[in-house]
Image (tube, rainbow, N blue to C red; front, side, top):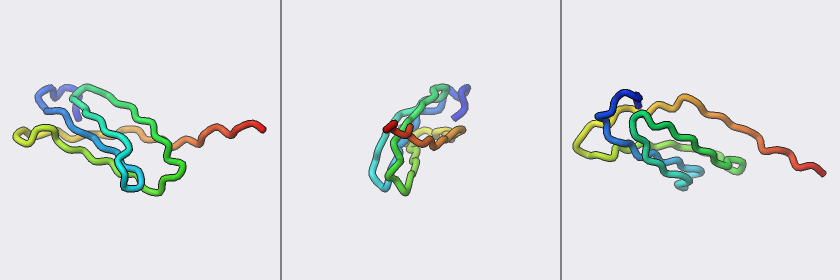
Length: 76
């Protein structure tokens, strides 16, 4: 959502791994969030955003960076 849209209600963001809710956050305009999840045994990732106010329009939520990183290889 845009940083300058202070009138937009917060948005509830749910992240699902293989169909199971793994993380839930409430995000307000101008508030950044970082989520780190272990997806090493995951075949499906879904992100859902739900407006927290059923009577007022919520602006869009923008996801601008996603990274997959391999875990460090343990030394023998």
